[in-house]
Image (cartoon, rainbow, N blue to C red):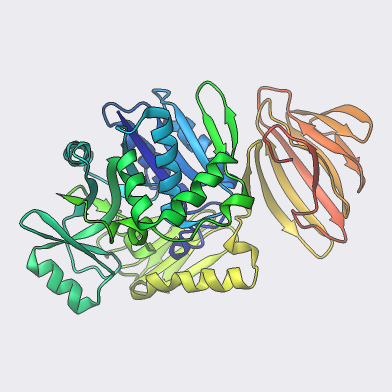
Length: 470
């Protein structure tokens, strides 16, 4: 029995402005229209003897993860979730998954730990490596996948192997060290893919990081469980989870354990850690350029240009990365692609919304797009999916005017319930309880005009909610 366990965390700060806190790297879609998260799901689903796929993710991302899975889960594989209130690194995520799996499936259940944001292009080679890893894990080993290096990369950790036996993990090296590692033939990239019996990992954590294991157990014991036929969600509470040490599984266990085995493999692996790596995935034109979206070039060489919503023109430039979104533009030299994370950090330190949100924000009921905003007004385009409802809510500081442009809405406005059709509107004063429901079979689209002294998204009091957000 194998349970693929997908770790869907991290900010993907080096892939800003497409990656944001509310829509991180795993949700970035490649040119084939499939997200990195969906590729991880399909990768796990392809393994024989899979009975479910377990995902550890931030609580705020659950509906976006489910939407991604629903698009590709043609076989209706059971999908369960452990939801964290905030990130506590990979040791906590792996520990909670191992404890849950051992409790449900017993000590011999095998976990295959996958990152949600990696790319693997050789599925057959990957499945062959998994078979080898499962055999070793059933012998009681903690197995890591070592990727055959194709270049002296300084952005990856390495694994040293001698006589087919694991020797040690090595931190990200200097350029000189990386070249020595590759030339020696003894070193492999550390992929972050692991395979082990849940009970074996738990035993190693008892030895090397008992504080992590104990605090995660406490969090699971006090978690909220939501269960239905195809999905179980374990929601960890911040009260207990805040005491979990923030440490990676590599530091906590892998680099200290003497029970490690390595499966060397060449599976077309990439962690796509920067725009330079992302841009290398496509097929360049005769001048070495890769362009996505509406792009016009003149005298441009060796550039990666991505536009999501408008025409981007470039003239007389070389070796640049240009990434344009609806509300932010990135321009960097290819050699500085790893430093994009510093822009992300500056934006976060200044609490600039572009580190966190896109102009279009997904919600469990649909999405909204900010069209324009000023000092005391904001205009949104709101899309509510068929059969879905916003929460019954109230705002202290803003009033709202809703104009339906497609579909029809049932609106609770104070103590009234009204039906609003296309080209009709309703006004909701500040302090009024209100709710919006789409009773139809097509998307409900409306324009919302907000006005007031404060227009922040945190000016909301929820009284009832279909998605557990009260």
